Length: 250
Ligand SMILES: [Fe+2]
Image (cartoon, rainbow, N blue to C red; front, side, top):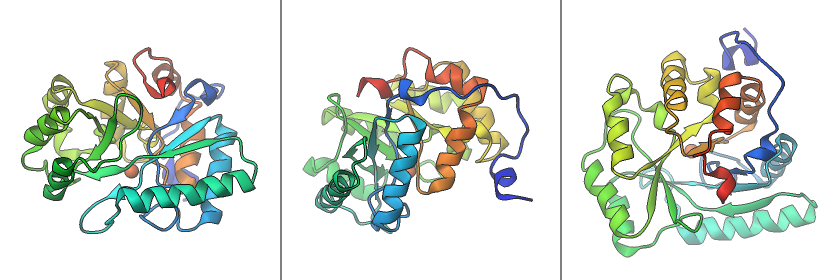
């Protein structure tokens, strides 16, 4: 089985690719070299940025992991990495903007960061991208969401469709919306790259028009190939054109 058939297991109706300049901005990626499981070095980062440009993006807001076990990143580490990427963008004469925020793991240590208000957010609404464990719903989830809102940040749940423990409990996702959490969907989920259950939930969220942000979650080149594939799927065209999508507002 070839690589692409593993990434895109199901044949689907495809149409002309949608022009992603309509979306303008990506808000979830791992492009600062060497600080998480994303791009390992600057050469790869520049190659990936060229592919974002080819897809039509005008700006990427890159979001390195902040996770106490594996990726002990700080705003200082991320912003100094960002400066280096910006310098390379100028050197390579690339027509794309880059900003940085972070993808925070919702863990006890995150509450300390919240207390200290030492957070990287994006946009004028101070959007904060956070992710949950893939195994179990974390304890104190609702309390931490409440704390985020109390601190004046607007929580954005990364790849909402990928938490298996909510696949049979759609009410949990509705509860997130009711608690003021914005929802981010990974483009790869639409292609079936994360499996049929994830695609099913992604399709339902799109049909319910409850997705606020669309993200590449780009760690490597294959994630951008997923975008090329998704850009030919009718459901992706429908998502990109939904009025509530906030990518273009940034
Ligand atoms: Fe991510």
